[in-house]
Image (cartoon, rainbow, N blue to C red; front, side, top):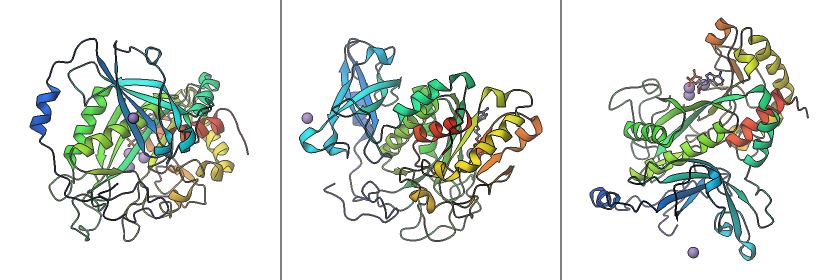
Length: 387
Ligand code: ADP
Ligand code: MN
Ligand code: MN
Ligand code: MN
Ligand code: MN
């Protein structure tokens, strides 16, 4: 990052990828770009962008290659490689890391051809999953628990930042009016950056994701969208692709998206989470509330085991967010309740009325790895894993 002026201290423990850069990167002419996007693409040339989680366990990387045929499934795509010493995933002397295609989506950026986005798992030179490849174990768990038909709905919150690392649209080194008008807010001084949110929504739909909705959140420049309900491993695959789409859409507008769980650590500003809504077939059926209560009993003694999986820093990131204030339960205390937003596990009001449906785990941080989170939820509630 040669043009980095300074590193903003939004997350003091993991500053490397919380960067701020010079704000005077010139915006390139989008009209000129459009001219090239419109060039006809040979039908025997399909662009596949391989996407993977890097060594931070939080940031994504991608690179693109030309294929001869339109891949219809991941079986039509070959494994690939990258330089893991540049992504915190390997040493320089043994730097090749393998990419295994696992899910495929339409590419909303390189339009004009049947181009694809490809979610990948990473494997080291011995073909063992890398440290940040949590999908490998998640996939095994989902297969082992397939009979329970687990479903997830993930509420991804995030914050938009300028290139300077300060929340998008906030007065430079200052603050907007206190929280209150921003949640689901409408208007020039309530909603900050809606073009990005709606562009991302359309991009998700085009890619083929089950995006359920969007809303403005409590802090100015903080937003949410939901992925799901999705079955098993799909939820996490789709969430990672939706994050990639958000980074890319925001990039086009010259804005950063961050999943940091507490971007504003001082003052009265909400943190950023990723509530995980979960159900089994039994919970969705008549009188499923019984299975929901049984599941909560299984979650209770596993609280700290779950907390370690609920952010990419073994729980440290979430310590800044789960304070017991700002619609959160305290980090070290498990609690549950109907319609209560100050608890670890909430039973939504409608679910209590219907006596069936799903439960909401409010603990996962916005930067959590959904492979790790959906994995442990199923291990605890379906496979009866105990410590
Ligand atoms: P809130 O903000 O009130 O917590 P949202 O509408 O943002 O609620 O999110 C609710 C989530 O619950 C959605 O992501 C939806 O996909 C998910 N959901 C709904 N039904 C189920 C279900 N049966 N199993 C799992 N998730 C579900
Ligand atoms: Mn090269
Ligand atoms: Mn929500
Ligand atoms: Mn929310
Ligand atoms: Mn929620």
